[in-house]
Length: 389
Image (cartoon, rainbow, N blue to C red):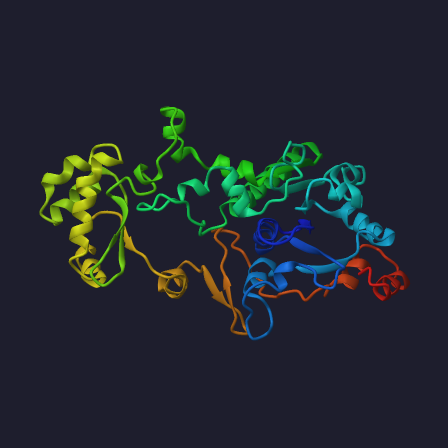
């Protein structure tokens, strides 16, 4: 596997860091979850719905294939154990509020003195040294600050709505993954690691090229309902059917509009598909709104089956997860105990991931990992008895 032989120490929690390190574990990395010795560990162990074995669905899908080390980093001997691991590690990930790792003595500057090859990644809301570095924030706060929530405005009431995906979390996870892999590649050439500073705010901003047109092209505030991606395009929109379902048109290319309008017997409306999204496309949006309301979703599915245009329909997450195509893409797999997992999105032809469905219990591998780090057996016992591991 691509990451076989890589050792990763993960101090992060919740979603961005843990999801990223699970991707690394899927492809062969030895990922050690460093869980705080607070009696609970990774918070997602207790968040949300659980399967009948007591494991939360969230935790199962960010922790598989990892090992768990319960560790009190405020204890001198606990830090010593971490240092022993860091000396042999390739990657360290943390997502504390800026300044915490320095107070704990596990910051990059400290660890690089022990291991110059180390790639160290910090994931935070606003970066490590910015004027907002210490501002508390999670995904929603950051999306708001980055201007992303503003696009979630209703077409009728014009009011912003709650985002339905953790955009700041997911984009930061992917940016961190990319940065770490680049740093590892460079380390192979130079023998020296690096520090990766990932701000979730930056990650959100980086993914806005498709919506910056009004802001930078016309020096004005975007009007979400008139924009190509949010309701202004007739061919990139949602339309209610007669049975209360919704058809999605998802491709605004003129050739697709021509094919659809020809099939509907209204090629005369094609000029409206050639103008910029917004008010000028209103006649075509109004036509589609009226036409799609005349038939059921099933009738439209049958009608559109042979039309060369981008279309689908709104379905629930349950329907999507149960769809045979999701199985075909191996994006859901069931382990030997009958529990479902989200499959890996990164697929290689020659070295495919080998998924481990094992879910570590809190601190399950603490003694094993301590011994691997060279801690004497008597000291391992003492650390265990004192609750350090």
